[in-house]
Amino acid sequence: MCDHCSEPHKPGEIPAYDAQAIEAKWQKAWEDANLFAVDEDPAKPKKYVLEMFPYPSGDLHMGHARNYTIGDAMARQARMRGFDVLHPIGFDAFGLPAENAAIKHNTQAGEWTYKNMDQALATMKRMGFSYDMDRLVKTCDPDYYKWGQWIFEKLWERGLVYRKKSPVNWCPGCNTVLANEQVTEGHCWRCGSVPEKRELEQWYFKITDYAQELLDDLEKLPGWPERVKQMQANWIGRSEGAEVDFTLCDADGQPIQGDEGKITVFTTRADTLFGCTFFLLAPEYKGLMELVEGTEYEADVRAVVAG
Image 1 (cartoon, rainbow, N blue to C red):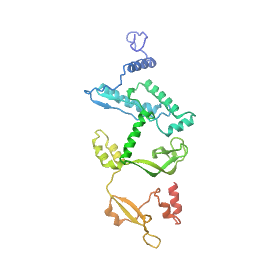
Image 2 (image 1 turned 135 degrees about the vertical axis):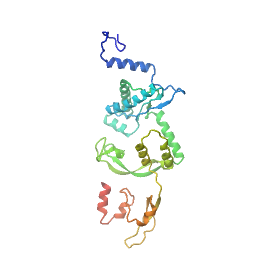
Image 3 (image 1 turned 90 degrees about the vertical axis):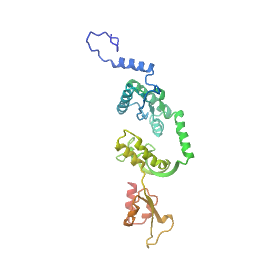
Image 4 (image 1 turned 60 degrees about the horizontal axis):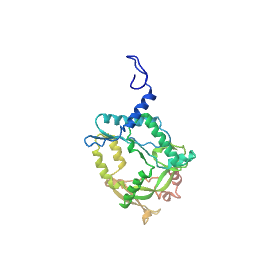
């Protein structure tokens, strides 16, 4: 008899690989033994393997299979090398796309989302991924998002969150905001609508208070490629410089009084300002249209702002 199935085999004969029977048998054995739970053995070295959580808009696809197979191979190899491995999984399941998907399928958002999570977990189980299911996270569960609310309250108490208006990419089809990366060749990556610029009031975190600390700690990440650390440094965006006020003049060359007559710019090279001949205003600049209203430049500026 073969260890993998109940069929007799002749000596030297290589048995056929019955995936249905073999995979199901050993996956059940792993589950019964809770094989992938964290040992929490202080004597073992630790390894944390985490892949990006999927969004439960449906069942898993081949992109998921590739991503999670790579992570699973890393986790299994670490266990074989004697590491105490934490390899959890979860679902990025809280957000407006869930509501839009529920509307599209004429069902309730919670029902649609949890159904998809159950299906995705069944697929993960069939693929044999070595997740510690005791650490399963569903971000739409109150037991999870209450901690996000608690963290926000603490940040608010310490003055580390604030509201301000800022231009965003608004998708009229999805009725939601899109990141720049979600606008592909001028269209929404999800529904194909043409996004429009809107100014919305939003919450912001004051990570600028920690910019230098974040930059310093990039050097505490052994094994990170330099190009990745440089990307992180560019995203943090800390630079040394000064804010300089430029005074505007009216048609007669007289300085305009008050805040309306002042434009503040940031420069890292204040020593070169005496050679300055112009500066640029972003299309989102609040007073831009007032500056060009009634001039020969108004039409061209409006075209840039709209485009």
